[in-house]
Image (cartoon, rainbow, N blue to C red; front, side, top):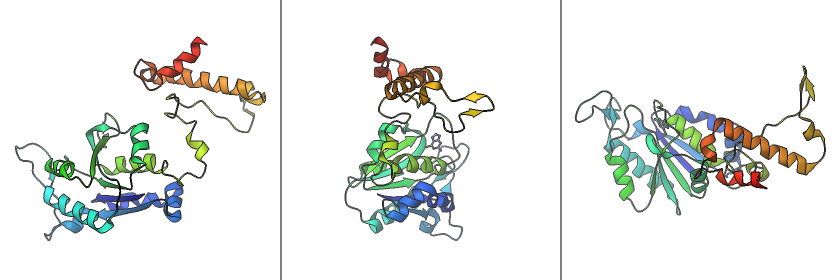
Length: 247
Ligand code: 6GU
C-alpha cells in the first residue's frame, strides 16, 4: 500500500520509521511519504491560510494550495486501483475497526492534514466530485485535536497493521479487542507467577484449553460490561456475544 501525507509538519511523521511501520516500509509492504504543503505555495511567506469569510476566530486553509498539492501527489504517484483521500476532522465519520479493515484493501491512501479551523469546505467537495478517488472524512472520537497530524498517525497504524505482510504473525490479529467477537480483550499474564503476592489466575496454569477459553471469554464480557456497556446493547458490535450466557 502507498501512503502519502500532506501536512505543514512533515517531521511529525518521522516516528513511522520505528517499530512495525518501519519494518513494513523496509519490506516494501508499505511505502509512506510525508509532503510539505508549503511546497505548493507561491508567495514569499509560503502562506497556507487566510481569515474566514463570514468572520469568526481563527484561520482557514486555502483551497487553491490544497488542490495544487493533491493534484500533484495524485499525478506523481500514478497508482492504479483504489485511491482514498483521507481528511481527519472532528466532524468526520468515526474511525472504527470495520472502517480500518475496509481501508486496508485500498491501493493508496492520501491524508490531507488540516490545522487551524480546518480546510476551506470546497476542497472536500472537489475531492468528492473526482471519480478517480474516494473521499473519507474521519474522526477519532468526540474530542478536539489541534490538527489532523496526530489523527493521521493513528489511522496509519490502525490500517497499516491490517495490510497483508505487515504483521508477521497473522494470528495475533484474530483475538484482539474490537476483533471478531466485538468484545474487549481479556487480561494477559506472564512470569513471575507471584509478584509481591499478586498471583496469576490458577485456570491459566491448568493446561485445560477449554477452561482457559471459557475463562477468557467471561473476562472479556465482564470488562466490556464494565467500561463499554454500549457494545453489548442491541445494535452494539458485541451484542451477539451475550447469547453464550443462554447456553
Ligand atoms: Cl480526525 N481531527 C481533529 N482535528 N480533531 C479530532 C479528530 C480528528 N478526531 C477527534 N478529534
